[in-house]
Length: 169
Image (cartoon, one colour):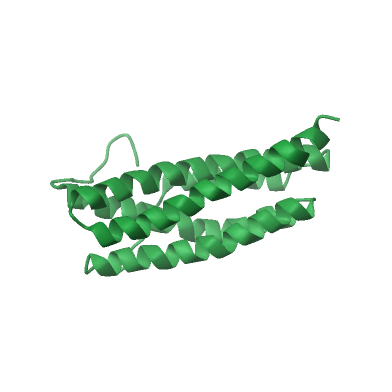
C-alpha cells in the first residue's frame, strides 16, 4: 500500500475482503518462494521444515479460496507489497555466500519474519470475520493462523536446538 492510496473502505467487510485478497497474494507468492529457501538450506532438518510448510502453504491458498467462496466472491489477488519485500530479503539470503550454518540461521530469521507477518494478517482477518458474524470463515482463518504459529515454533526449535549453535562456532 502506498502513502497515498485510492482504496476506499466504507465498511468492515470492505476491509476484510481487502485483507483476504492481500493474504491470498502473499500465500501464492510463498508457494513460489519456499522451494528456493528449502533448496538453499544445508541441513536436512531445515529443508524438511521448509518442505513441510510448503504443503501447508498450498492448503492456505485453498482455504483462502474457501473464504472467498463463503463471501460469494471470486478469488482475487491484491499485490502484497510487504510479502514482496520479505521475499526479496529472503532471495538475498538464498544467493548469499559464506558459512552454510550462518546462512541457515539467516534463512530461519527471514522465514520467521514471514511467519510473523502472516500471523498478524490472519489474526486481523479472523477478528474481522468474527465481528462480521462469519463464524465459519473465522474458523477457517483460525486453522491457518494455528499452522502459521506452529511453523514459527518449529523454526524457533530448529534455530535454538541446532542451527544457531552451529552458526556460533
